[in-house]
Length: 221
Image 1 (cartoon, rainbow, N blue to C red):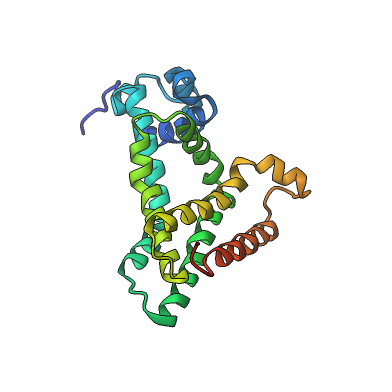
Image 2: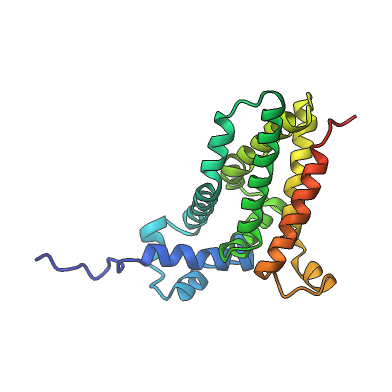
């Protein structure tokens, strides 16, 4: 039996560092977060960070990759379905509207209703305000595919013929979902909510979907 090297991190260390880094980078941003803070949060030796990730920059990129992978797991199958679909006639219009509803509901469930939503949203929002080279991974990894899918659906559902206008409208649909994370405290206090209970999430879904279906009812002028 080969003896374990003393400087080899224990199993699960890499995963613990990723989980801790999501929280620390989300709260403090890349510049203010330190490897010492992350190692302390993960309860591991600080030497594990260069061992697995090469340093803070490598760990941050690994966090971004992890976030993108998690969101792909949530929406990847649905986006593939949209990419394969052919929308023709009234049947295609009806199918497109149903898929718009499905995309938005999946987005709402993740952003506002899941445990991971608040954690990953902090990092994504920081990247929106102060984009780093890692933002390309976020945009290409899931934001661009979601925007493209919604634009296709909007054109099929509404008869919009201008891809640029369809993309503008897709962005407004995404914004309607993101507001429930970005402005959570205002929404909770303004509507006297508990903080997105299952019943409140259902109410959010109904409002967002109703707005989306109204937006896609006819082409823009």
